[in-house]
Image (cartoon, rainbow, N blue to C red; front, side, top):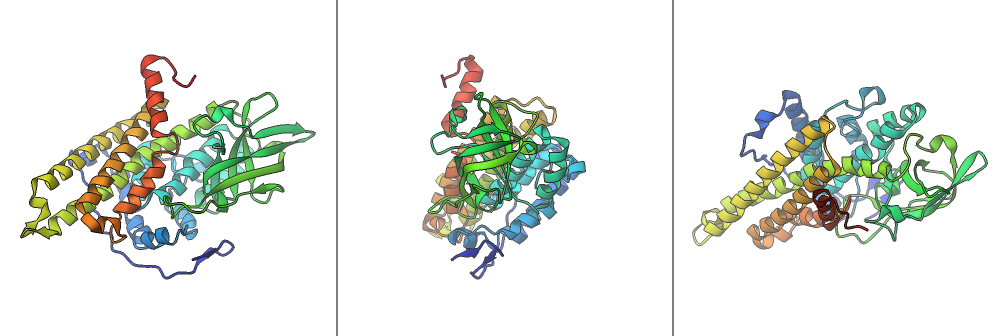
Length: 407
């Protein structure tokens, strides 16, 4: 299957699949949510059931990113929901944003990646570090889905060590020249705008707004993925790209810029991974109650009940973690280490639940009749991007001991 990137028309027949998901809430956490937050969650859940779940297995199998979802996400309001309304955002709290990411990743991690990259890694740095002119130019178009964005930090030889980047930004007269490359960039093949981080001549890291069509700028797609197959992933290549002065983010200098963006993205991932785990648990519970062996449903066997009980226990703990982390985000108190704990814990939890759910489904668990194997493969990317599992352990370790293990 191929897709025409000019008109974004897929060349395969979409497959309908009914979504009957019901969310677990063992500790009655809905009592902690406002009516507005529950309404937002319900709206996004209904969207996922209508616009993503019926088609996601076909998109995934065909390695197809449905570009039409971008405008739909914009209309739904999931791009930059915490961005002020004056710039096209929703002006919402971080718990509402988290609930959105939970519901979207419950549908698919690649779909959530598209949304969280746009909001946390593209719109946030423009909002936080951009000029008023930059905010007015870019944020409304990104919020509506008219433009798609991407974030360029990781390089072919510098992933967990972003300070070692070799992409350069040099001043030449009244403009700058950008050279280098970025790797494993979500949304890049189709992005209209890229937030890129590069070192200037003094070795300081600067944020740059690079626009599609700039001479010397290309974004080749990465093929052969077994994970996030319904998401567009590529490179960013800069060959003497001329950058106007007005495309430099004026209010940030140093590694703090990209790392602050990653904090926002990691927060969204902590909620998103929870959504994937909830979907696997719901599917496993339904299957166990329906599947008959030895004359009775397999849900009646002790080992199956053990698996389901442990799944629900971990999901409930993760729900509490996300809720409290959301409160800390709203109060401006959440630390990088606290966010790292949430991302690492919840992604690892989701991976383990996906694997247990696959076992409950038996051989059917590897087919696209169920979402389990797709979630499992997606989560193998999520456990690596925005900071690997081990790097987050070391971030937490440094916070505990006061000693950095990176140097």
